[in-house]
Image (tube, rainbow, N blue to C red; front, side, top):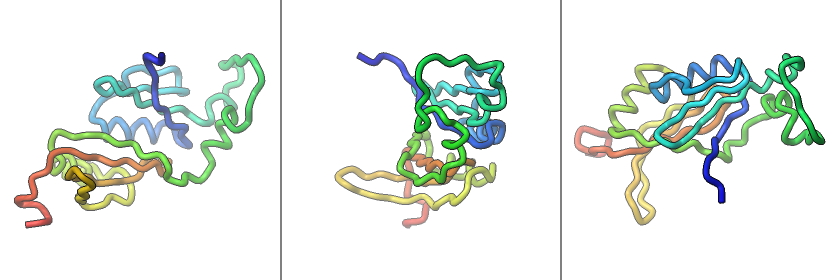
Length: 151
């Protein structure tokens, strides 16, 4: 039985990604291992940023044992890869309109969508954007259509 874990993103620019997620999540890093790994603990969800270049730039600070597998262990190659967008980081806000306005004011992320709606058995409001490594972020939460786009 798995009892703990973390979703982590291998980043091209560690400082930029950490800063982006500090603004997005409106919180400081919970824990950090040098400039290699930063952890954000979000009410039980652990989202982390890994510096894709740290190990290759600091071989004296990293010890490995066992066979290396390029597809998992070559973090420089992974950091440079084009992101196909198959993974979506879904976050929930208490007030979707307020969070959308906060993202607009911060000016972070790219390709910020409008607040959208879908109903596939359950109504769902959300907006999407991209982080510095082109990962898709979807933010959902309660939304009052009154005063919104669909009056």
